[in-house]
Image: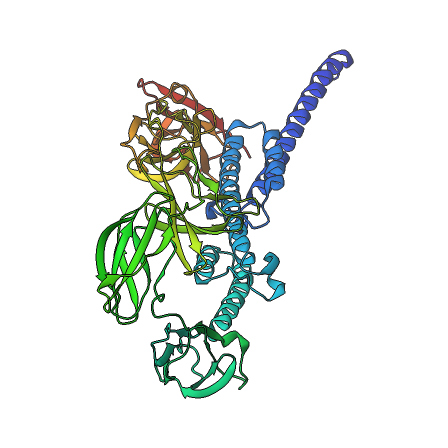
Length: 591
């Protein structure tokens, strides 16, 4: 409407500038909105159903996805929106870290189980379909315990299949039992023995004398058999064998004894420095005398099967232990049958409470069993150089760690060596940093790599691990003033958590000066929303200078609805800070 060209040009120039500024402002707002939308979409898509409140990330969410979302969040400039996005992003990172830790634990369990199962087979390879000669029930049971610890159903099924096959092969090898024959002297007239028929009873057994078949006799339901063979001369070989399930005499079932002189039918078993009892065989019910280092120490009797046993205490390496049989015809003890106490040839290295692996030496390829305070925890095998190593975890001071070696003659593990865990007490000093309503992370110091757990208002929340420098931190979100946060340290000397150290959240300086943020209010909608510090629980709402109502704020968010708000109305929101001062902000309703 202005007609003066000069004045009109001046006004038009300012008007054009205003339009440029508005366009720039709108473009910036649109750019920011696009950044927020992109970041929100990326963060939401990290979670199941694209919803952070599910508190569960998708199976496809990995570190690359989180890093990509993080880059988009970093591009957001609105501090309130950015904080909301960062909170969900941090939670996604925590869930991924926990998932990765669980996956690493599961991988370690799978590797341990796979190694144990493979080592049951020749060449450590199940496809050989043949188990090692050293594979026994204890080894299979130990592998079974490791397989049971695997949680992945597919991997567990694969391992269980090979474990079942190893059990089948072991069971098959145990079917054809070797007959146990009672000794005979030239004075004996009855040959007898026993067969383990728990898995298979052939019904009969063949007896041969000096490799010539003599007779077939019955095997009773308990596996016993006998035959009146008459007197045999010294040196005669009496043997037995029986038919397998296919009806063929099987060489694997053969056993034999040699007839001995009546004066030399006493045997004594080997003794090591760990043995405290002398054992062996003599004539049934024979009277025997026990000799240690040339001195008689006790007398006793063999049982009805000719077995004798007497406690003499552990003896030093090189000590000669003997057994003398009493001869009723002369009322004299016969010359002693002796054995010399030998070393075990197993060593165990000293352990401290910082050591997690038991190591030492043993005969090459010896099969070993490891015990903690008398309880077997694992088995292993010495390598070709005679070295062994087995992870048992760190142990408390005073714990007894032992290694036993399998005696191939008896098929039993025998105590070899022990060591007692030593070491200085582990530190139990730790600190908890003070917290205010401004803080969202729990921090403090503790011994390096220590484990801690924390509670909020008495409710256990999570565990924390200190780093190698002894520092720990855990995102807990901003807490209200008065909330009590407690931290407990796992005492490695007792394996128990210490009494808690607690801090009470105080009001931070940031909460007393942060003005409310009011979101855009549009005419016709009549919805007023925004944010205040998380410590604020109630806000006051004004319209055109007139107080309307008090509105609750939850986690720093408030919402109030007034349907008749018009464009141009001024809405004010305020709250009282810690000093009693009203902190306010205003927003004009737009069309």
